[in-house]
Image 1 (cartoon, rainbow, N blue to C red):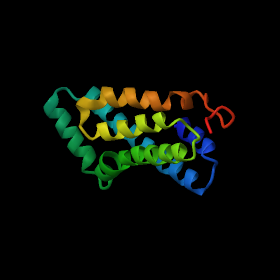
Image 2 (cartoon, rainbow, N blue to C red):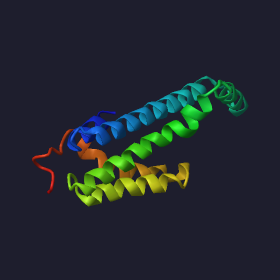
Image 3 (cartoon, one colour):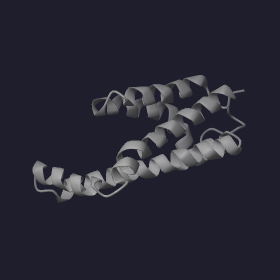
Image 4 (cartoon, one colour):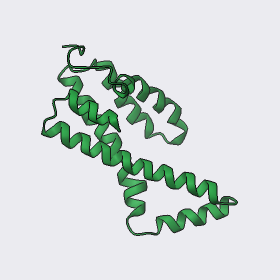
Length: 141
């Protein structure tokens, strides 16, 4: 999540950057909720049938399926897409980093089997931001 704050800083902290970071952070929170539910259900269920029943119980809570499993996680990718395109267009980052993130989002549409490729592409695009390695002084113009 600190990545979105760094991206917002690099984008100039304006209204678009702030809104985009907020959307991405909400998506990250929803994704963390989904992962947490999946891990807890996987740890508590004694078999696949029990797991299906537990997921059905969780997803039957009004709004959970929509927020945690459908729309919410998409906001993470939407935030990344918009932010990286904005940064590439303003030349705050190298274009290839934005291309890596855009490709990661597109490849993620292929399903869970594509997650290793998505992870590699996201690492290529995001690594310097996670450690605060790109600053406006070192970013290409």
